[in-house]
Amino acid sequence: MKLYHGSNMRVENPDLQRSKPFKDFGQGFYLSDNYKQAEDLAIVKVEQMRRGEAIVNEFDFDESVLSSGELSVKIFDDYSEECFRNRKSPSKTQSFMTRLNPEQIKIMKDELTVELADWLMSTYGYSPSEALDVLYTSETFERLQDTATGFYFQSVGYVSSFLKNEVENATFS
Image (cartoon, rainbow, N blue to C red):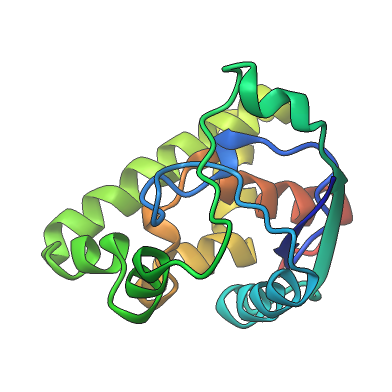
């Protein structure tokens, strides 16, 4: 079976560590058999992230996995009022984010900053001061500081993928 995932980047191997934790049906890698739906979601993702290009990733899915118990799967054979409600009303994430006060958001940003600096040191062998220099001059850090992006609410795995792209392509300010 062919399944599609819309994104602002090519995805060859889905990594749940990069998935947002509070999606409509929980943390996961969301797929559709509808190419147009995946394409629309890719366009939205590019607009949200302000980078990349709309890419529809295609996967050949082994249907026997559905009954093996390896994955937690939610299948909608037809239109789903439940899914429609989740998409048309504020998501659980947005609702939760709006209840955070500025101090809580600052703490989340600070914690993610420490995690990203640790990630830079362990991944690239940077010293603490080198890691902070790279982080503080990155577009990723600038986006983390912009509360409107919601980057502070993402996993370190997800945010570090943007930082990795900057490091490996040397696109620092």
